[in-house]
Length: 391
Image (tube, rainbow, N blue to C red; front, side, top):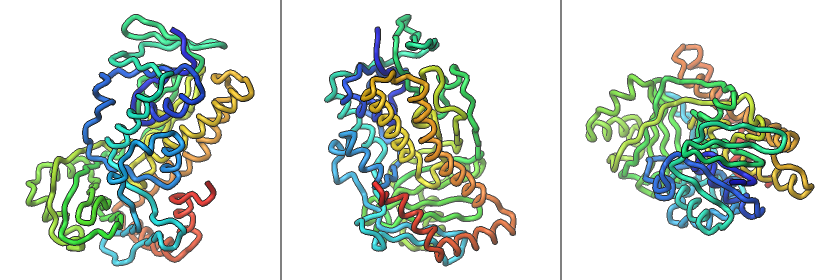
């Protein structure tokens, strides 16, 4: 079997790329080890994805946004970042911009369902599910992909999108910089007595990070990050004790709190690949860069990478250049590294700074937050990233 593009993995990044490449008339194949039911009917995983205006524009460009019900999209009007017990906070407000919000929140499973709905409308995408990739051999003209079901597939370009613990990346011999923060993020939803006023808040306490993401007026997604030993204790708390803890942590700002639904926990491991391509194989999504969620850049960054790769593939087709050509993939790597590396390093730096308990570090982060709140170039840089004035 011969294809122009083979995508390994059927997560949101993989399928989003398939959606946008389909209009090029390239023959595309997606290989996924799980059953089709798993990615066509994704279950709620507790995560609400924060999307910038840039990302919304990309989803619109890919033809995916129209499959998302507007009622599932929650606008974020303001963002507040607080340190410890200090009453001061970094404040970012949409009224200082030309937009009606800073960004949007959409449940992860809603995004994944929308991408699959778009996939179903496309004719030039073949999906092989419940199939593992055993090996990939590449030459100057193509790659041969050996599957566990004894079938072989030939491709001009192979896209690796099987997650931050990518086995295919390892098979290609691409090394990564990994950081295990020995912490876990737990997400769940809570109803509350007082309105959140569409304000997203992040509290950097000295023993945890707590984020409040506004879903509806009296409903928020709660994200709490704790060291693994403390996370286990938290997960064993009763509903009543969790309600009381979050209420106390927020100092009653949202009134009485009430946990609804399940809790979902994820390990805090970040990954940055030393190479984004090798031998006609190119990395996207978490296989390329796996972000810490503290700055909510994960899926936003993945969409930017996909957008860059799509542009380079289309340019190659226009100029009648091999899409798996080294120069084509080098351009993608250079552009995506310029975008992703500063964000990745800054995010990991923030996590280290706000998890360090040394008195001098606590003092430094108070000063840093105060400076960021009064220094307009910093605020403007954050707003530019959220709103994308230049797009």
